[in-house]
Image 1 (spheres, rainbow, N blue to C red):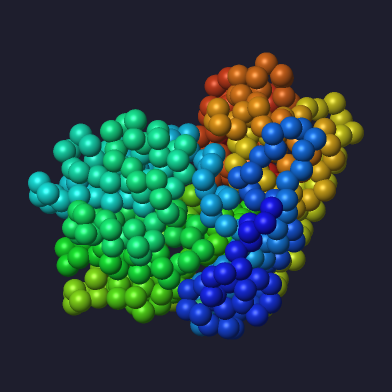
Image 2 (cartoon, rainbow, N blue to C red; image 1 turned 45 degrees about the vertical axis):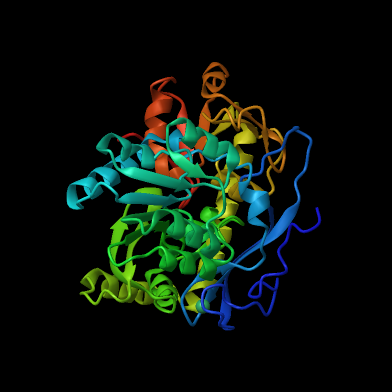
Length: 424
Ligand SMILES: [Zn+2]
């Protein structure tokens, strides 16, 4: 397992004394230390296998407000064989379709205009532009996922986005009309190079739209299970504004969205475009400070709350052992891995975890090799209780489960604290 932990990038020096990934500053405080965890999207091939663990330690820069995990696992390891397909959730598909429709209605796309999506995944978003005759290019490093997108007729470059790739794209295709980068900026270890790449491709007519869950939701919504190694950075409007400004981009608007448990959509333009900044920018930045996002004491209190939630979850699992009940999980998402690996789970307490993704079925969730099965298998195994891990789409999942299961089956979520999920 040599070369899995990056040590060569200038700002990434490992535990202690690391510089901020966004601004190079040195003043970072501990927000939450989850200990050593496996990479959240890595699954076992055998029930008795084990995975390498890496420290997972969220810190926040007091200078630019960027949250970040300190120890870094290479993107090559995490993303080359990525098992997350955006098209697996109807909520995300609808969100993507709505976004594209809005863009097409609000913008005037000329014949030679084109749209670039960075981390275009399986083409779940870009495919919505095709019926409008708008040219699109996707950048998606995971080859297995890029192939799906290509099969839909979407030109897809299977590489990591970087300033170098941006230069090549600009040279070959000119400036895009629109650059979309959803749920990706947090995934890049060299954030500055990524932003430089955006700036290279940002012509005078280009708009950049970036969606990402906000660090505020981790704090306010107790969403600590969204901290994992592949999320190197935890964005705030404060940090996006600061980092982009030093690289020639201007944050001119922030939309607050409900997707992924609360995301921000950051709108960027070339700094040379001297036009007005929407009041939403100052407002969101002000709320971030007022909510204590950059306050070490607030996070220290938060760490205690997280411990209580994990304890509550563990007690719930243990209590179930005494009764005649059969607990299953639903959604073998990264969130499941983070929470299950943050507590001591007794083997056999969770019978299996169901997931619609064929990519995940017949693999096993660490630490105890809980089998991942199809939803159809879940239905015949007669669960009494199901724990929904992707709480951000719990209503969608609950609807699906209750349309296939007896109403006596209890559905649960562990975030923000252990609670039963009811449709009404
Ligand atoms: Zn910083």
